Every structure is written in C-alpha cells, then in structure tokens.
Image (cartoon, rainbow, N blue to C red; front, side, top):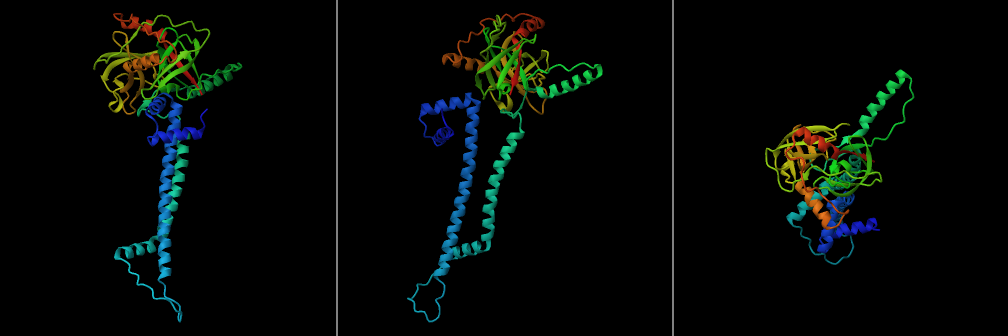
Length: 386
C-alpha cells in the first residue's frame, strides 16, 4: 500500500524526468485510465506549483534582507570615529553611481517592498483557500470544454415529493416509503451479449455504486471495468445473479470514419421514457477540432450522455457526450473507432475478461421504426449513487 509520501515521491520523479521509460509509460497509462489517480496527480501539481512560487518569493525576500544588512554594515564601517580616538587610517570608500541609485531606491522603498512580500504571502494563502471553496461549490465540472449531459435526479425527486405530499393531503392517504432513485442518470448501451455496456465517463464520475435499468424498469447492479477519461468513455459490466444476458445484439460497431452529412440518430433517457432524435453528422471533429469526436446536429438534453449514435444502416458510430453551451443543435459524440481501440487494448491485456462483440448488423435494410423496435431492448438508464 502506497502512502501519500510515496505518491509524492513518484510524482516528483516523474515531473523532473527521473523515472525510467517503462515506469513513466505505466504511470501515464494509469493517469489516463484512473480518474482518482489523475486527480491526486493534479492536486500534487497544484500544491507543488504554489509552494514553489511561495518559495521563490521568500528567497527574494531573504536576498533583499541580506542586501539591507550589508548596506547597514557598510554605513557602520564608514561612520566617523569619536573625538580624540586614535585609529588607523581607513581607506576611502568609493560608491559607484549605480550602487548609489540602488541605495537611494532601497531607502525610499524599503517599507513598500516589505509590504509587498507580506501581500504576496497573503495572496498565496487566499488562493489556496479560494481553490478549496471553488472545489466545494462546483458540482459537475466539465473535463471537455462543453456542457456534459448527465441528468441530475435530485431536483426531479424534490419536485415529485412536493407533488406527492400535495396529493396525500388532498385524499388523506399515508405517504408511501420513498425509494432512492440515485443522484445522477445517463444512458448506456450493450457492448456484448453477456453483460458489458458502454456509457460516458462523466456519467459515472464519482459514483459509489451503479444501477442499470431497461425500458421495463428491470434493474441490475453494475460496476466499472475501465474508463478512458480523455475520450469520455466508460465500460461497465453487470454483476447481478439474476442477469441472464442481453441476447444477440442487432447492431455492429463501425471501426472506420463516417462521412460528413450522413444521417444519424440516437436513443436515450433524458426523461424516464426512451427518447428518439435524429439529424446529421455536421463535422468530423468535435469541440475545438478534437478529432476523437464527431459534431452532430441532433438536439440532446441532460440524460442523453452515453447513448448510442447510429447511422442509417444501423451501424453504431459513436457515443453521445455533450453539447456546446451557446448552440443548442451542436452536439458531440465520441467516435466508435476510439471505443474499438479501447476494447482491443483491453482484450490484448486480458483486462475484464473476453469481449465478444457482435459480428453482424441485422438492422441494415430495416425501416427506421423497425430499427428502433429492435434497438430499444439494448439501451439502458445508468443510475449513479454517491
């Protein structure tokens, strides 16, 4: 078990370039895969950066004090001797014009420099305090620069409780015991027939436990197998004795790029029932040109995150991630090619078990309503408990 000091020693060695290449590669892979580890490293960087800045300020202050002490000593050395005191002749002290100006500046601004050093110290303390307040106040920061789309359930629950109380007061019935519906929710979809699913990383970020629900509100407990923070992907696996499998998946995963202007659609849970939306692929890169994402012209809402993005032929081409805050119709989805690379790397490393992906696409050639009827059994609500 590594202590906090061990982590700091590891991070410091990485920061100054003293880690061997294999250890450095392992650490970078873990930073990309483990959000808690990445947060610990970010906190280390922030703390060491602040302490280094403070150390530089204190070193400057000590240098200024040393200069003042030398000047005071020189003034004492050249002070006139007392009357009638016999002294050896003292050499004449010559001061250059530059040094004279420095002394004049120091004499005039000594108090100002001292105050500035004090203000710098207070500024560091205030910054640290402010960072902690900011962390406490921000509930759902986006790692990706755009608005992520997991749905906050707590606010909906409060409204429902208020409505239930009003109804109970009218008919005099005893309020039913409340069931914990989770704090956040998003969408997920089947990756394999035997219980692996895909959703967005930000949907499950900070989760203590996860529950997967189908369209009939049948719930299963699930756990994360692997997360890819950079591409906003998470792979889950159902861990529930009553789960018997999804059955044959009707869609196939596209490994290549999709074309600009292709018709695309998605299914998701921005509310309790499945919601369908369609549009087109409007750019082959995402927010600020990120080539791991598509931009799509589909109206998406909180709860759509993690939902499947499919083309007209029923190929799964992406995972819905978020939308641009100032443009309702500009949404983003992680490309399926990055999901496939992640699955391939996990399979090669034997991480999480075997991933038996569907080999054929039975949605091809079917009408859109027929595709949706087959697809809806493989799209789920992902409920997050903290």
